[in-house]
Image (cartoon, rainbow, N blue to C red; front, side, top):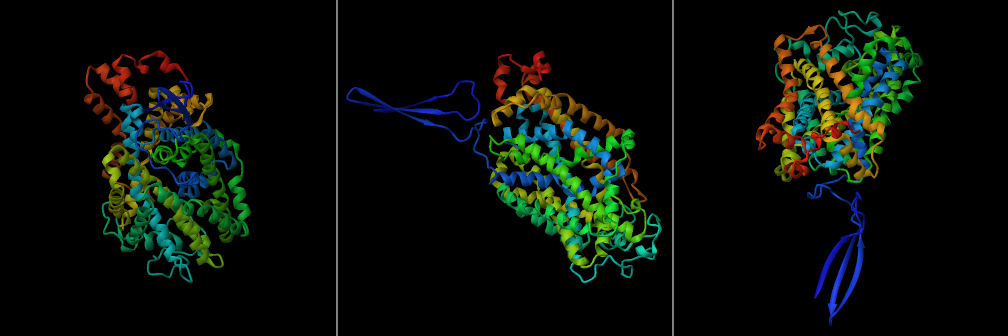
Length: 606
């Protein structure tokens, strides 16, 4: 006769993987013989659920996070903000908000996803009443995909157009040009609204065909050229995502690293151009008096909120595929720092070429400096067209834009896919089909953005889909974790993963500083709201109403789900509230009348 017993060799309060002693007991002729074996499990999964897919390599995760966070805005937004708001002085408010809000929120989302090992909605088993914010960020990521993929299709269109001996945006003698077209040499007043450069007309009249639309009420049919480019983008996204992180983790080896190679090559070329040093000096010139302007601080705070990619559910989704014991603290510091350094580095590239354009056409730098799509699809192509071997440089530049956009789009799609298949478990077995459904649905909605009036739809989506709503989502997320779940409990979770609790600085930021910062940003967002416009075109009232409905559709998920949860739980209101704010794994404590959130200590502890 033989039997097998097991006992833990560690203290009852130990956390993380525990050493287990296996005792084999044999009985022969009335005498018992024992032998023991010590076994240390490689990983502990606290939820007790089936093993989750993990990244093939640690570097796959890091590249995916960096690739998502470093997107087109790093190239077309940050350098212009820095130049416009005091040059090097702008780094003061930028770094300040980075330290007190950006990094803490980035760290919080990575830790939240890694510990709970679920997507943006599933992680809220820690506080069920807040699950609505999970659906908020999933919807926001979906909405952003409707128009973000269109930017990538523009880059692809330009890439195909660059395989010519002479770039098509050099002269005004093309079929799409208007009488208002004027070469730089003849257009000394770039701000003249009655004049347009060849590159500007190529973007608006040859690519967008916006001249064939009278506004958002007159869209027309999708343009087959842009539709084809959009279809290629969707196919690339599908085959990057259909097998999960095993495939996307390999794709980012190209999409996340290529922009750095290209930026470096462009910088080496840019600094050799006449006027480049003047452009870089203007980029870095320090005007500390600008720090007295509240608008500078608001723009720095806004840039931090959107540049790190917090609130889209992507960081939660990516980190949920990490090994449980992965050092998410180190990852947060590394990836958020790389993102900010990339923004700063790209400014040297952008302003070396803007300085060159200013020098070449003998105009002030502020006449050529701009942000947004106008920089990367008008000004930069114009500058590249004047270089020897311009077609080669154009191909290199638009490959960079393509890769910058693709990995960010992959992150947004992964947030939606992971968030929903983790919430609706039956979708796990049909990931390939569900991924196909998501990307095809996104493609169909995006067709509105590739019509003659598609730029108006694009502008409307860009203005409303992820503005105030993303700030609101992150605010509710921070309150749910720091106040209702509890900073102390969240810190214990992190200790269970990496072996030590976060320092007091991080806990204070999570509980007080970051929520106050986000509340301030939400108020400012509402207070400074301006209706969208495209050039001189002002959107009609019904279009603004549609935009607000889009924004509110994601934000209302928070109260709607909270009401649903309270109405479906059994018992009196106090009992239902107790269950709704207590982690699902602790509902048995509620049955015994033990509710942490009903004690003063829970709300005061940091």
